[in-house]
Length: 221
Image (cartoon, rainbow, N blue to C red; front, side):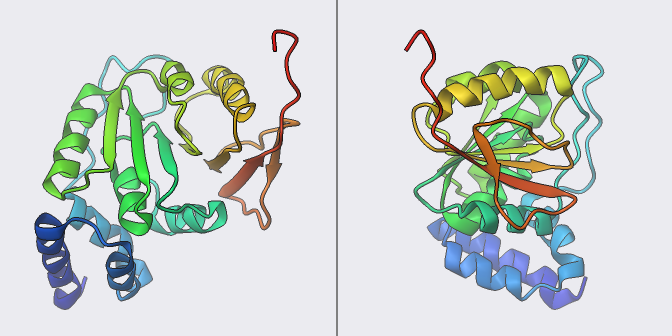
């Protein structure tokens, strides 16, 4: 990474600490970073030196932490048309890198769901350090927590867990989609074959963004 690119992180960090996030300023600075350096640049901003070891007690069906590439997050934000009016939910948020990046890019409220306590603690510290007041992290099993995040409008999945847990989450999201439209971003996952979800074109091998369709009421409704 060129020294001037590295120095831009310090300039950005100082501005965040003083004044909080300004999406237009952040995007302009990110655009100045060569594509090959963007992941390292965001890692430096977020204070990630190396990936932490996963908790040995990670439940069966949960996937070890691996951060999503910046290019994929940018594409998801664009295709899902995330704005400051949205609440972006990162399902399996790890160190909070994606949630933090989305707030910096869009000004959206961001909620990270993460089962590993050490990662949640670290993510909260980084968000506070960078003055990201609309970015919060909830500790717990995302497969159980999603149903309670009723303010979410965009849900982001980067291979957070196995098929059984995913099925449970999709049931909960379908209930939410009966109340209002939502978008679902899936990275590195099998296609979601649900009548209430339609993919947003174009799709790619790595990323598919879905929009919900109005759901028919259940018998209980």
